[in-house]
Image (cartoon, rainbow, N blue to C red):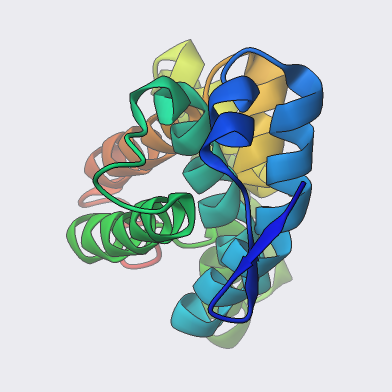
Length: 190
């Protein structure tokens, strides 16, 4: 079933085409490539949670676009690694424009060094009040991500949306939260 090309196992085009309509064939492709793509991404981002999220996004793109794969233009391996590389690029671009950071880590870290326990409780209440002002879909996504500690993939599953949509909700929620916090006690922390 697998042929060897340049010392590496490669799937014949027929199996790749079959994967577009067969769950078993798709599972074999994913089982073969997920560890390789994950390691490729992990080496580029250096963070296990980010590598897991980007790998998941990569395979979502692979599955969605599997029908458009053209073996006359590139091997499947080349095609899937290109999608992974583009996903890493997208990750860094979005991070540069809108840095997603842990509210718990940043707020708790800044608060711990600057205020006492009573002030920390007050700031937490301000954060809760600001969260209530967000559109419900953003507040829900932020709560799952930061207060429940869920990964983006888990948030997506819980909300019944794609990982890309979940990530966008989280980032837009953070942007809105930062705007709401401007000029207030949390301004310097969020």
